[in-house]
Amino acid sequence: MAADEAGTDTAPTQGTAPRTGTGATPTNGDTGPRQAWAALPWLVRTAVLWSACLVVVVAGLYLVGRIAVLLAPLAIALAATVFLTALLDPVLLLLRRLRLPAALAALLTVLLLLGVLVGLGALVWNLTASQFDQLSQELTQGLERSRDFVTSTLPVTDAQLDRLVEQARQGFSGSSPDPVAGARTASEVVGSALLALVLLFFLLKDGRSMWHWVLSRVSGPNRSVATEAGRAGWQTLGAYSRGTMLIAAIDAIGIGLALVLLRVPLALPLALITFLGGFVPIIGATVAGAVAVLVALAANGPTTALLTLAAVIAVQQIEGNLLEPLVMKRQVRLHPAVILVAVTAGTLIAGIAGAFVSVPITAVLWRVIDTVQRRRSAANGLLTG
Image 1 (cartoon, rainbow, N blue to C red):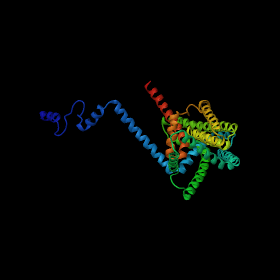
Image 2 (cartoon, rainbow, N blue to C red; image 1 turned 30 degrees about the horizontal axis):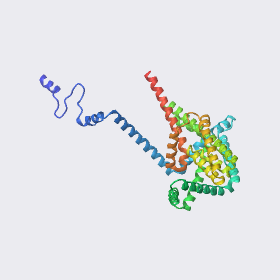
Image 3 (tube, rainbow, N blue to C red; image 1 turned 30 degrees about the vertical axis):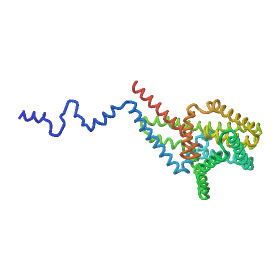
């Protein structure tokens, strides 16, 4: 009986692996992939893991971008609303310090914005409406002179240059204008503007209470991380919006004064183009400067064009090396390579609107991620210490 019990305890059951002190022996199906993975060099394993993570991140960003393109009017309205809210937040806080109710302060802030936009638009239109046709003619003449210079200097014939220009024009235009599509686009623009104004009022009025409601749904230690990351992202967006507007205005004033001193026609429209181009870093300033040089070439010849080019470069160098470090906070600044990649990606995904919003989105995301990483590193240091 004892022998039978001993045999029962020690004899393995048919079809099962014998037990050892370290547990059951893994089957070949378990050890095969693991041994193959462990046999790979560490550099290959690291590259595979990082590549997989990069593919997932890029796929997620692409999916978000495609959804934003499909909902373009709503996405543009939301982006404009958040940007304007960050820009006008100091005005709202000033009115709140005067003991005004939140709704009244938000309404006055929106009305102030509308007054400034309508006033500036009316002023610019009255001064330059009759000059836009002349601006188009000056640009055409400048392009013709540039074409003559290229054909006389480089080994390019007129036929080859015409073919390249035609291919570029077809690539940009895509197809013939469609009146129905144009009317639909105009209605979408008007609808997006109205929606942005309504959302701007509610964000100014209830934005902070909305953020507190979001934080109340976050529990545990993650709440402090979310609070700090959100505050850092909002401060970055506010600093970027106000700094970009100030730098764009300084660029427009500097280049406009240079055009006036050089007696280049259409100085005010060119300054307005420079101001708008300042909201697209690097690329916008380059395009605006090129337009000013072309107009100067067409109107006053190559000498004035070279002087205009020197003035544009000088203003941009002063802005990039002196004004931007002073106006922009350190946490807002991005490397020029990152800015170029962000602007290019935004343009490819959503056109002009994507070029405008790509850099602030990148700056805010980087600031939020950096804040979260620093908090986690500090927490890990406390735990290990």
